[in-house]
Image 1 (cartoon, rainbow, N blue to C red):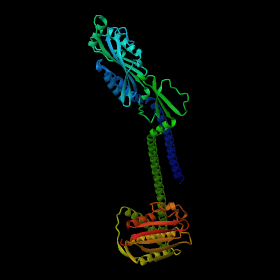
Image 2: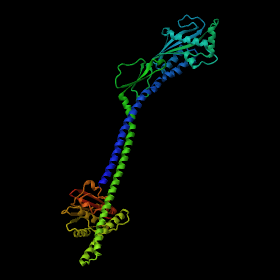
Image 3: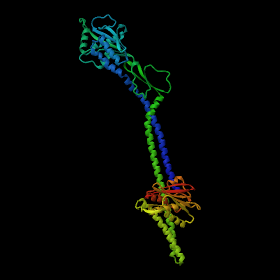
Length: 547
């Protein structure tokens, strides 16, 4: 027995070690996965700002690359009215444009006395200012709003371009940007791009003093307000707040528990930046949200491994119990065979000995041989019957059973066999029913034998009560024996199961109650037990009346 306990303890230790191992692995996996998730969110906090920047600055790129070059399509023939219409479309689509200055320019070799002229024949006839007002555009012709520096820079660029331009080819994008654009903080100036034929004419005009003519050019200056850009926070899970701030913005009173990053705007907004802020609590919620499915998968794997370990433990436990049952069965069964065989051996030796035996001795040895042979035969028959029941190889022989005569017959037999066995019975509401008398007799014999065997001396009592219940007949066997614990009651009908007590050390192989259960099941009935230690047990057999 000690060896078996050690095996059980060893297996339990292995399972415990495995559970500890996977639990530690779970904790490590959770910590590592959470830290990796936190690191990933921090990296995204630093990198995803580019996507927010691109979405926020996209209207500016559309304005710069698509809307501004539309001025060239007018070929210098914009006037105050068409410039107002153009400006209205700009204000409607691009709210960050707060004011537009339209320069109505001309190129000639005639001398101009206005301050908006240079020494190479480029001058301004009129300047108009456009501002949005209640969904419309207000235009004002006022030279005072203008900046001579804007004009002079663009005029100088144009004159240099005309002087060196190669009219045999189209200007490159780099030449166009350097000549016809002037991008400064919060301001973009643009001059319409002349055709190659126009450039040839401008060259001739500026070189030939005898030609008296002038040609129109258009220039527009767009004054921008970066704060009117619409911030498109495409990652609110990362950035709690995104604002537009000057490049030099660097608050000294930055609160603790916050993360900050920034991204510079480009072009005319290069003096501004996007300023991203989030509290640690906000980012922690995002980390938790992303970690949740990872943690769920880790827990699922953990529970799967726990289930496997439980199945392994259960399998080992079942195998151990089966091994113990088989060991006890072989041990007890060997003992059951060994005792009658030994008695038969002794009786046989005495019979065949040289000494003469009296008639009384001969009959005594014959009785011994007969009784021991009956024991062996009964044991073999029980095993054989059990096997036949499990294989369904026998049939139920239905006969009418008169209950009073049937029970009385077994009581009288047991009183002769066990004179100290107190037996009583009561039958109410039913006198007879149909069943197999042999199978039912085996149930009676086993339950009555157990009631006698597992009772204290002086308390060997059994009361049999029979009554109908609905379409069944209920047979109760109530004894005042040693009883059994509650946890043993569910196993007592299992094959080879033996309760460890002083009455069960020898002479039992654990087949009696298992045999009864198989018999009752075979007769389409049920058997159950209720018991208390040192009080007694009640075995209840329920069989159908019309079986």
